[in-house]
Image (cartoon, rainbow, N blue to C red; front, side, top):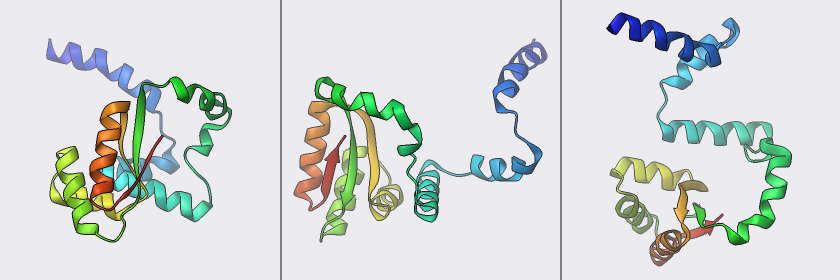
Length: 140
């Protein structure tokens, strides 16, 4: 039965992931990256080519802006670490239940998205904790 399940699952997994041969190595390398490394990689590409991943969404991003007022969830972005980077790392580590290295990597990569889809009240609480540590935070 295991072989049957693998055969049934294989076409579903392969269909959307057809990778041209010229990109196979790149895709394999990206698959091996951690989420933090991917975040850093996207930022490098944005700087290198002068583009934004958010801008790539194009027209879909435009109409959503007026609807933000009624949004019940927000994204928390660390925009600046301020003068006390160590306190900000500790606050991020504690608030997001991360390891020290992961928290440091997020803080070092500022501006970086810390958490997506948080309830507005929880996001404001997280924002206050980080601002108390000296960071600048943007709720989107």
